[in-house]
View 1 (cartoon, one colour):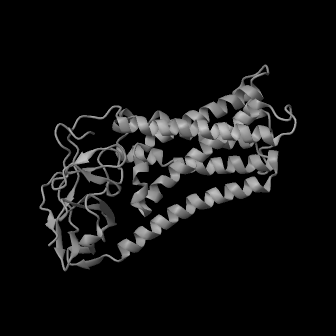
View 2: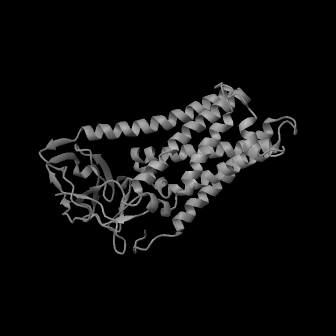
View 3: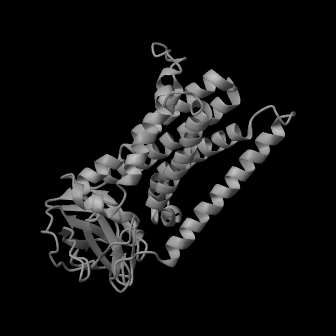
Length: 347
């Protein structure tokens, strides 16, 4: 959505975002291919096609790592929140790179026989009973099918067809795809390379992804554990600890996840944390031009009503807020979506 409440199609920020993706892809592929060619003494030591296959595969794998760490990084520090903008473009770009990788694999390794390349992929290595010698290509193929499904259903048409909760569950399969790709790369190294340095690099990447997710989850758990009850009201945090035009996410004692925002310097409101569009985390967004803006796709909500500005019709549950002893307190009972509330005032 835009400031004048018109649906965004292709704006300047999206173009800049995609331009950085394209430049990054060109730079990475160029560096990978150049270093690979220099590492082989004889020009015929390895085919340039194989180098390109490895470059595309490693690039897609790297892009998936970046996609997976954007969320926890944004929760740990607001510095990384701009990276959340239209992360869907990053995912689709990663799928395109992965498609080029698997396409070259099928053509180069399986495309010159008398049988279908896909069929050849399944029968070329019969060691299905052994983990170490299992055809590692199949792990990658399974992961690719998940990534392709996610890319094909990334359009809002599928979101509306499936509903936001079902769509989000579908796209959580990215973690299954990641696990399959880790096994794909691990077994591929064991069977073809045997290089310990590559294994160390893979282990480091996995540790970074897992540790960032665990750290952000632990921080949120610690913050929520400090919340205390005062009857129906829950004490959250000092009012001035929230930066103006920013928000924080909390989990109430009843399990509700809310986003608390400060705007106009001294006003505090609370709404449901899940965006009505794609269940995006509103607490990671900002207040822009007086409206709460979801960091995923720019959907906007009026802070005191939880309603999207006309002509849009999305609504969020709102919560009563008060400030006592300079601490924000929220009533645990949610108001029906779109119910007007009063902002609490920081004195």
